[in-house]
Image (tube, rainbow, N blue to C red; front, side, top):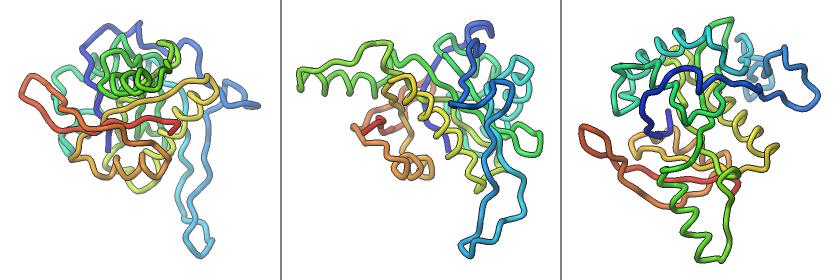
Length: 219
């Protein structure tokens, strides 16, 4: 259930998370661990907790393999996965996080520069109408969100998105994203988390185009 943000391939070094995000009061050596889910009755579900941590260089082959698996099921990204490592290693990626479940990487999300994003363009048009402005370093894109088909319905996507939102909030940044209309589960997730709809756009790629929606947070 991914948002779309199209970026070209680039070498790994530009994407390494040089200053890992650490929630307040937590050691950088520890992953961010989330509690086990509970049924409506309050009885814990017997599942391992999901942990979120910064991407490490050694994770790249695992993340690339996961992306190929996701593409086979969901068709994400629409550009294809001819070079999955390069796709998750765009020079526009500023930080990346992975989700682990029982020691296995099951999800990924990135914080990217917002230059060229349709949602960023809509934000700037809105600001001009309001005689306001957002500095370039205050606008970021949530992107490259994907979750293993084997780890769906475990709140992995929600936890990854919340991690980026928490980081942006701490840094005083506004987030934008594009999500394809076909990705209804992702759209529902963003709406539940308080993202605000900005408008529609056409995401263009080598094989054509696909309708997408633009969102921003905080609303």
